[in-house]
Image 1 (cartoon, rainbow, N blue to C red):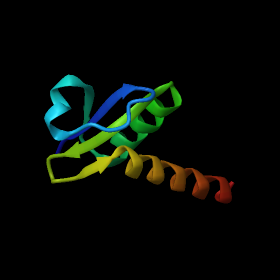
Image 2: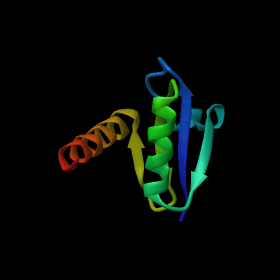
Image 3: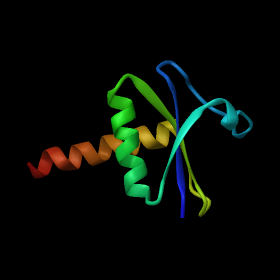
Image 4: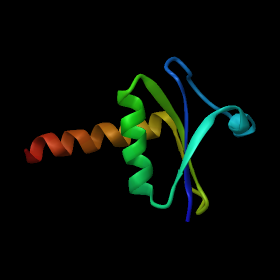
Length: 79
């Protein structure tokens, strides 16, 4: 299974499926690794635009941001 994490410069709002070939991406074999990279990208001044998986997974920028935010809140509560 492969998951592609598409990234762009801060300020980029959305990415249509037809624009995929215009953006940089990195591939991962697990969704957890893809989210780890997305967290790194977002903290480094860029934006994760989409996670696209061979299994049909398609997460948008907003869905990724919400998932990362919720995970951070859970981590803060556990600490």
